[in-house]
Image 1: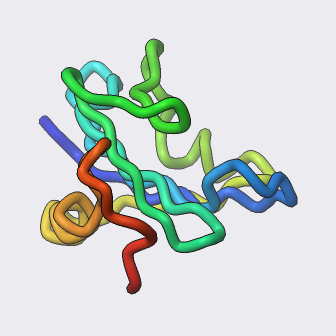
Image 2: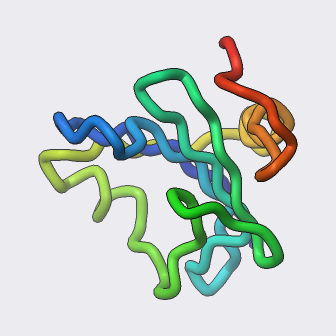
Length: 102
């Protein structure tokens, strides 16, 4: 079963994303990911495409509860439609688009 995840990352690192949207397979591996940065830039990655800042995890991610239990993260399951909305808004690497307004 494929499921979708939204994670808020609470930190002060200026170059790191503050939100992560992931599509996860039944073994816990990311299939696709969107990262949202402080400057409102959105980047996406899948099995064929990644950027210097955005790539898929090489290990299975934990459950929503395991992620949410960590102080720096707030995690929740989201609908496929919400993930697809973020995926469609995210810049394709190298397409020349700047930050994508919300």
